[in-house]
Amino acid sequence: MSAFPSQFNAAQFKFNKWDLDTIKHQNPYLHHKITNIKPLKEFFNLSKLNTPKTINEAKTRLLFNLNFFNSNYLIIVLIISIFLLFQKPMLLISLIGLIGGFIVLNNYEFEQIRIGNVNIHLNKTYLYLGLIILTTPVIFYSSPISTLISLSSISGGIIITHGLLIDNLPETSFNESVV
Image (tube, rainbow, N blue to C red):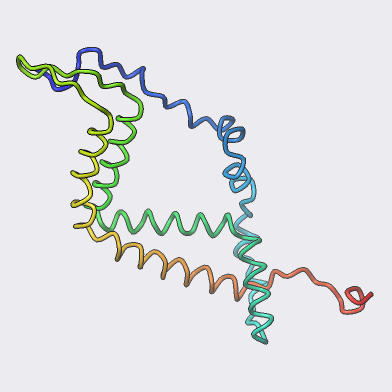
């Protein structure tokens, strides 16, 4: 006998949430981030590359660039995190199992499973609890804390270096700023 009921149907899954128009209407923050991505020529503009002269200039430049290039910096963090996940395949497999388990439990209604001559009534709370109990030791064994430390240090170093070295401040003369 199968562990899944015979009524299992792939059409019951709700994967239509990933349409771009749906993202635009349901998540305006994500749509804003996607439309706010700066082109590569502007992001890697080497003609604006110089070191700040003072601490105040460095602070102003860093804060402006963090606000101006925040979508590009988010892409950098995503690329580095994907790279780090491929460096630790056990962490990648366990996270895929955890996320896949949550997707299956969210999108499918488990009522009863017949194993042999026994009907088992399944409660979603117990299924979520079982999924978490099974995947948590595997995830912690695959060292997610060192991965997060690596991710924060590598991406932070790249982002801070880029934010400090690219002089992207709008040019305003002293006479225009004084009223």
